[in-house]
Length: 279
Image (cartoon, rainbow, N blue to C red):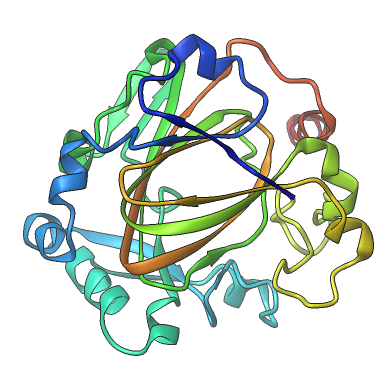
C-alpha cells in the first residue's frame, strides 16, 4: 500500500494532469468553487428541493450491495424530491442514512457527445456552483456527475468503463478511497462477461471481507483521504472504492477522454466486452 501523491493547488496544468498514469490528490484544488461555500443540506434543499430524482437504495451501506439475494435488490432505486432525499441522508440512524445515494447514473449534470453538449435544466444550478475546472481539457470533456449521500456509504470496488480520466471534486464532507492499478485485474476478480451479474466492471470481492484472497490483499494499491475542497485525479481504467464520511457528503466528478489512449489489461478487457456487444 502507498499513499496517493499530494500536491498543492496550482502545481500542474491540464496537460501535465492528462499525461499522468497514477492518481494524484490536489489539496484545496476545488476550494475556490462557489459550491464549497454554498452547498449545505439547507442550501440545496431550498434551491433544488422540489426537483424529483431517482436514487440508489441499498439494503446496507454498500452501493451496489452484491450480498443481496437478487439483482433487483442489488440495483434497487427509489424516486422522490431531492429535498426529501437529502433529509433522509442527513437525519436518523447512521445505518439508515447510508442506504441512499444519488449519482449521475440517475441524472447527469452535463454530457458531451459528438460535439453536442447537454445540460440537465433542472440540475443546472449545481453545475453553475461547480463549474468545470481548468485542469479538465474542455475539448475532451465527456460527462459531469454530482454525488450526494449521508455518512457511511461505501461504493463497491469498480472501474469506470467509459475509458475516461476522472477528476473528483469533494465539495462537502470527506471520504477515504483505495485505488488499484489496471495491472491488478486478475487479483480483483471482476464479474465475468456473460455471467449472472451484469456489473462486469465491478469486483466480485467485498473489500471489507476479513478473509480476502491473499493475492488481492498483497496487490498494489494507493490510499487517500479527501477533505472538503480537495480534488482527486483517477487515471482511466483504475479500480477504486470510496467510503463517505461526514454528516452530508457531496462531490462532483468530471470525466474526459485522455489525449493518449491507455493500453493495459482493463482497457483491453473492456474493448473485448464492447466489441462483443456491438457484434
